[in-house]
Structure formats: C-alpha cells, structure tokens
Amino acid sequence: MVSYARSKTLTMTRTPNLPARPLLAAALLSTMLSTGHASSSAWAPTATGAIPLNVLNAATDLGALPATQPLTVRVGLQMQNTAALLALVAAAADPSSATYGQYITLQQFRAGYAPSDAQIASVVDYLQAAGFRKVTVEPNGLLISAEGTAGKAAGAFNTKLEAVSVGGVSQFVNTTPAQVPAALGGIVAAVLGLNSVGHMASQIALPTPQYLVSYTPPQFVSIYGGSSTRKATKATIAIMAEGNMKGVLSDLRIAETAFGVPHVPVQVVQVGVPSPDVSGADEWDMDTQYSSGMAGTLKKLYLYTTTSLSDSDLALEFSRWTTDNLAKAASASLGECEAFPELDGSLTVDDEIFLEAASQGQTFFASSGDTGSFCPLGPAGVNGVPAGAPLVNYPAASPYVVGVGGTTLFTNQDGSYDTEIAWNTGGGGLSQFESSPYWQKAAVSLLSTTGFRGVPDVAMDADPNSGATVYVNGTPEAVGGTSLSSPLALGVWARAVSANPKLGFAPPRLYGLYNPTGGTGGLFGSYPNGGFNDILVGNNGFYDAAPGYDLTTGLGTFNIGQLTQDLKK
Image (cartoon, rainbow, N blue to C red; front, side):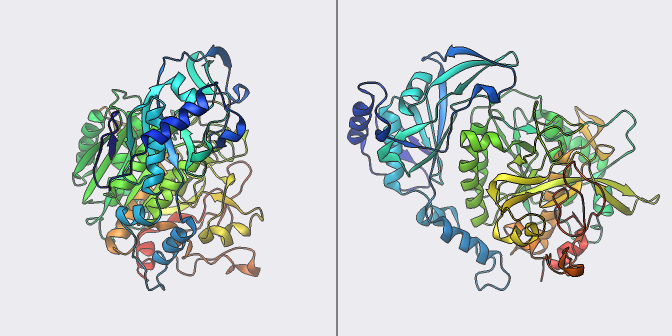
C-alpha cells in the first residue's frame, strides 16, 4: 500500500518512488475551478455515470448534499497492455503451451500492465491539490483512495451530488456523470464513492419450515464423488466478507467439531475501517464452514473483511486479495444487478482487478444470484418468484470470474448421488454489458449469437430444501442459496489445485473439458473428459437446463474425483 502525506512527502512500500508534480496539478485545478465548472472541452469522461433518481426504489430528492459531508473516493486507473495480458493468461492456462502454469507476480504486473508511475503521480497530485487527504495508492496501481468532502468531490469531478431518501433511508448519489480534467483522460477509468446506494448483498436463502433435508460438508464431498480424492492440504483460499468476524470464527470452530473435520488455520485480513456489523454473520458462517469443509484440510483460510458492502469498499477488498496474492482462490457469495456497477463504474474497476488476479493464477468464484433469470427489483438477494429486469448478477458476470449457479440436489436412501435439477430461482442468463471470453464463446454461441457473457459457468447445490447445516451463533440452521454453491465450488477447486499445483486461473481449464460441438447433430455439447454432472431438467424462468452448457446451470455440477483426474491431463 502506498501512502502520500499532505505535504507531498511520499512514503511507499513494495513500489518504486513516483515523480512528484504538485505545482502542475495545482495550476491545472486552479484554472479549471476558478470560474466554477469549466467548459466540457476541459473535462474528460469516466465510466462513472449519473445515477437517475427514477432508477431507485421509492427515492425522494432532499436537495444538494451538504458540502461539508465527509466522503471517501476511490479512483480507478486504466490498465495498460490489456491484450498482451489476456494473451499471457491464455498461454498460462493452456496445457499445450510452453508457458503453461507460468503466471506473473505483482511486481511484473506493475512493470508491464499497470498505469505508469508518472500517470499515478498525476492523479495523486490532482487529488491532493483538490484538498483530499490520506491519498493512498494500492500496490497494483489500479486504485487510489482519498478522503475529502462532498464539496471537494463535486468540484474535483465536475459532478453534482444530491441527498436522497431511498425507502426512508438517507443516501446520496451523483446526478451528473463524473469527469476528470482532460489531462487525466485515458488515465482515470472511473470514480467510486460518489454514491451510497450501490452495494452488493448476500445470496443466502432461508428454507421453508418443512425443508426436506440438509447436508454437512463431508456429506457433500461424498455425494459429489470426492471421498477418494486427496484433501486440499497445499491450498490456500479466501472468503470475501464484511463486518466483525469474531462470531464467525467461533462458529467455524463449533462447526468443524460437529462435522468432524480438521480445524483450518485462519487469518482475518482487515480492509479499510473496521466495522462492528454482524448482520451478515449467517452468510460468512456458511462461506467459511462450507469452503473449508469441502476442501477437507486446507493449508490456510484467509477471511477478508471490509467496512461495508458498498461497490467502493468491495472494490478495495477485491484489490487487496489480488495484490496480497496469498490465496490462489476466493469466493464472494455476493452480488447485485449488473446494471448498477455498469452505471457507477465499479464494473470497469473490478474487471481490471479480476483480470490482474487471473494473470497471477488466482481464481475468483461468485454466486450467480437467487432471483432466477431476472435481476431483483427490490432489495438484492430476495428469494422467491423471479421478477425484475432480465439481466444477471455481478460480479458473477465478470469474464474473469467463475459464476456459480444453483441446483436442487436429490440423493438416494444410502446418501449417494441420485440426480439434480436446475434450482428454479438460481441466477443465470446473458449479460447485457459483458462480452463472452474466448474460453466460453463456443459454448454460449450454441444458445445465443449476441456475443454476450453467459452466466453461470458451473453450478452446485443451492436449493435451501436440499441445503446445508450451518452453525450460526453456535446453533445449527438449514440454509441455502447460491451463497452455498459458490463456497462449495471453491472447496472443490482447492482440492484440484492441491493435486495439481500448475492449475491457476480456472475458467479456461473448466471449459477445456467441454466440447461444444461434440453432441448429437452438433446441437449440444459433450463432455469427453468428464468432470461434470450434466443437468438436464429444470429452469430458472427464461432458461431451461439442457444437454451441455446452459444458462441456468452452466457446464453442470462437479464430479470431484473425475474433475481432479481430468485436470491433471
């Protein structure tokens, strides 16, 4: 992390010194702000658009946000040489390549693909000249945080900030797009923190009072064919969370004892200002208990926790997991309708972070959501009959993330695997903002010619009526949702990575086990290398499960033993 004192004295760890240009930045700011908003030619656009009040649920405009209100902004910078980085990722994930398994380090990313030191310095100087304090650059150079006020933010980014009441809760939004001085155009990608309404929610689903059955991690391992596979003794994984983790750690130990699984070494990584919030404890309980439980025995579990589930705070958390590069795989049982991160620019920032992670051999799993083939109209994460816009959840929609959908699991009387059907509210569909990456294009092209990204990539059990026994506040509960399927998939991948250390970024390898034109008459794909349970029945609204890849269960669910063997090839 890089810190800049207000006096322009620069201190830094893990990165080289940056050239200081405070006089140029101050002069630029003075010229632009001397007569209020300058002409549009003096400003350059960013990916952060205006937030219209009519897209918010029950919103009331309360007038201009007080200029003195404290505000933390996070400025996302533009990555360089993206095409070359994608080519590197492709080669590192290709077993036939001479550079298979050769991913880069943070230092190599900074040298070849991050913004230049001069570009970073120009943004830092501008923020300091605009009156922001505690300007901090993340080690990858892609994200700069700064503390200031609403008035300073409005002036620095040529935007208008309004106070609003959304469903009776006081919030704020930028009602005009965020811009930067023309000299910073092409350097600044987006500005986060200019609204308080963009946030993700957990994808947890509670069961009906008459739920059918719930499973423990060892039972899931057995059901999904992993009993004879080696445990993930060499793997490190991470969970993305928020708030106070004290109770989560206590519940994890209680659950491990109850499940008869080893106690995993855990390290909590605080990102940003600590929060006392414990409202999401049931989510983080399920994530930790079922990722590590599915893995069997882990080298270490990192529990990243941040201040809030805002787009801005989560971008910092995702970045910190990436730049730490301590855990080679992570899960976030979080999501929001992709339209909002596209609108506020966090999609642009996060996609760069996830691409960097892929280039370092890291894999990020994310829940596809619990509202079927629609984005929720109300609060994110509400389960039930799908309703809303026909979009998909983010970050599952990111091309550089493994989106994990949901199934309803059926077992035989002896507890063995019987069959699965698509969970009727498991998230899935076609993104309207993200393009299908090369490893997925052929699979999705059988279903759509739009070129849009298909979600999910894979699936696991999610229906709360065939869900998980989770210890919350020391007491077992039966819950589900794609909040369950994502950590299950993470645990499976940890086993695969432990068995084959050259595995890094998962998506190209997973799609490499699928032949999109190998089915009957070329209409459906086939699995010549196995590794998946192909889900054939069920739907999530618009989309049906079908032979091969589909837009409700992706490639299918994992057969752990077969998958681990196939990925050694």
